[in-house]
Length: 333
Image (cartoon, rainbow, N blue to C red; front, top):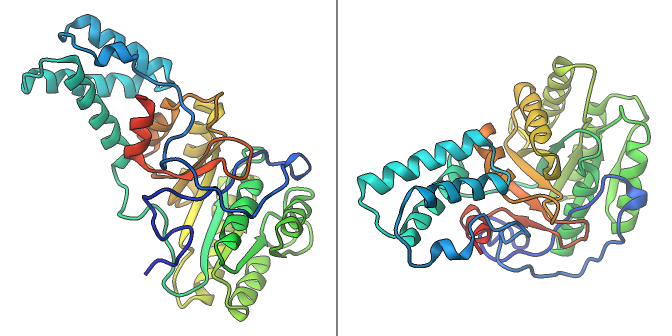
């Protein structure tokens, strides 16, 4: 059974979680006040279809071309756009769709199906036996450490006991950054020496989480090691430590944080991580006015990894649990 708070009503309106830059010194002051967001998935994104296209109009080639241009303008890549438009053309022909409004409704369905493909019944996995363990990965600068801290802040505000593990021992001052966030939000941080063994840090953090009956353990991991083999082996070692402490159960989530404003570069990063690590979900940070919404659909289509959370800015409330249906509706508003 899901705990009360963040993950109880997963598809309902949710509280503010996290978002922002990865540098602690630039991060905004956090508030533990609960701020209810508008409908989940309603991020600030560019509308992909002009309103006039949903008005009374017959379907013709100009309509298809305008829809295609609108999708690409919203940052869907050409491959995804052509695939979706091919499906739409076939549906219009096979089902004898007559109006532009009906065609747009079909397009919404195809985009939603793309986002829902391979997604389980619950966006986030919560352990039936605490602590729930999230491993968080991502390259430097995408908002990984800040995202962890603000997620911890929100969980704490919901009454959860949270511990942070400073498992990124390779980046200079990474543990100091997480420690600073921990002090700001009043959450314990377990750390080791710089350049030390990340798995030993996670071991200590697991032992403390169990002893203190913590609800969540959030683990910051190295964004880059010397190569993919090292990254994979390091995360495997960390997961073995988690499994040993939890009767053979691995981490509940391995979340990859991506910067949505970097477009294709974010996709390339994700492909590299996916080839080395069993990613269970994506966190798209910085999906604000500088990132058009279509990139979300492209990332899901290219990677076949579910999007779990979307960050929409730099403030404490600028993140939402990702709801594909409501997100697609927001694209068309």
